[in-house]
Image 1 (cartoon, rainbow, N blue to C red):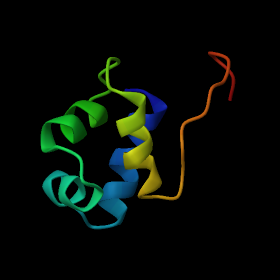
Image 2: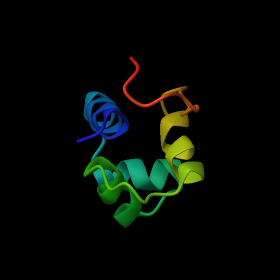
Image 3: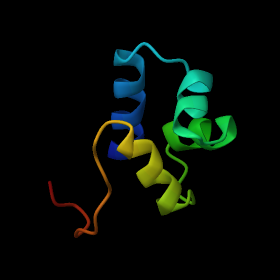
Image 4: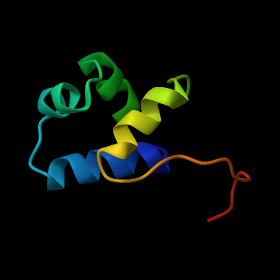
Length: 67
């Protein structure tokens, strides 16, 4: 699982939200949320940023393998 997937899943659970509740609140589809949390690599970055915005975060470009 990738770092974004882990972050979303951990924080969604900490907020006490099911995947369905998170999808509704963020305006994303349930299927997208499920695929995102499973670490699917072909998800759309604009939608990833919508999900991350729920936790006041965003994905930014960076070199692979750097922390």
